Length: 624
Image (cartoon, rainbow, N blue to C red; front, side):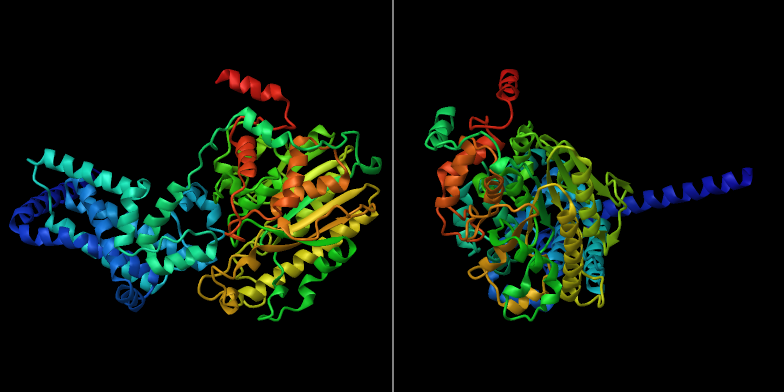
């Protein structure tokens, strides 16, 4: 034992001696190879920019064509990378540390962009990084494929880092003041490039960056093609900052009262014909009817259950606020009856809500004597739903966590593909209806049809597998509605898909449709149905397409629930501004009244008529 300890100690001593000798050699290299180190430091920002761009392009030839077509954009990338590198040098002094940090950030963003676009056909923007806390759940969405090219590009970066580490470029000790000045100047430049329009606008113009306002996902992707990776990240960060939310001009109780006082309030005497039905809102993940496209031949068999429900109830079209991703935008509009455009259309609107009880639609149903429930067969922590949605007025929230094997479902959970089978969700909805004595309002956001679509009859036929998933969902839907027909409880069902599905960037079915930023509005049109088992009157349902956020008021009108001034005002908006979405039509002018009411209810002081007792807000204001 003693000899073993001595041997281990000797090995450690040998290692420390070697490390000491090597560090001494590196220190010699700092002085001995000054010109080489200077060259490494000058060329490194250009090198890492090229590697990040080549990695997300996948091929050197693609990057070369972009450089030839858009040389000014690449010059912008180089300049931005140089500023960042100088800032890191000023902070760390040692060249290898600055190079390591910048390499990690640039390549991590490049790899994330590569996987994101390959997964859902949308490019990375910096606000997407807010989802980093949900990386465990995101792994189930993404097509992550480690290719030889990716390994080679990363190996090249690592090799240069080793070279820089060996030759050890270091800023002299005696220039702390100059380092501080350089760091401050670079910080000002980086900050100004994001938040000061008078600075970045002429810079973007000088380098010929595409600064087109990205009012839909296709325009955003076209902007990426013009700006490529790094310039795209910077420019969209500027656009996002300039679009940040602020209180409306002259926001006050008087302003809100003036907006809502011009409506005649309907009688609050009770429900139509004395019937208080269950209300079930089903927002089906990635459900879309591709039969609207003549370019692709889709068999009606995949949509049999959907067609049957539409023939038995009311069929219409609603305008979703999103395409391919950001389900929470559609969810926000259905849960609140408010437009995401009213709060500047953030990708994740739940992140801008005030930290308080929220006047969501569930609060109205509670006031009308309903039980309320939210059902989502996925992690409650994703998008922080379990924390944030608890303020929306739901008596019960039901989630399912496959990662930690925890579920709130009270029915047997089965899977179809990667996620919980829609049939399981329908079973849970039926169980909630049966087990509740009072009428119940339920909102469910399903998961079965979410990508990836690499499971099915042919793992490589993404669209074919998607249709297989849709058909299975429709089969479960038919069984669910048939069960409700037998149930002696009046029930109203609203069914709609949240958005068209995400498909792989370069090989998706969307490439067959020749869609672009000017003709993609059809992808924001979602077919829906309203179905009932008690003879509901659909005469109040608008015949023309309306935005998602109006559909809750359509349901309220069908069941004849009491109206306050706010509901009446939203009904008037539905007549005069049926579609309020830049993604669908960027020519629709801003509606100040709609924007003020949206801000007031989810961020402001809730001056508008509200289902939550005013004491709750008064106590909050008093505490502030």
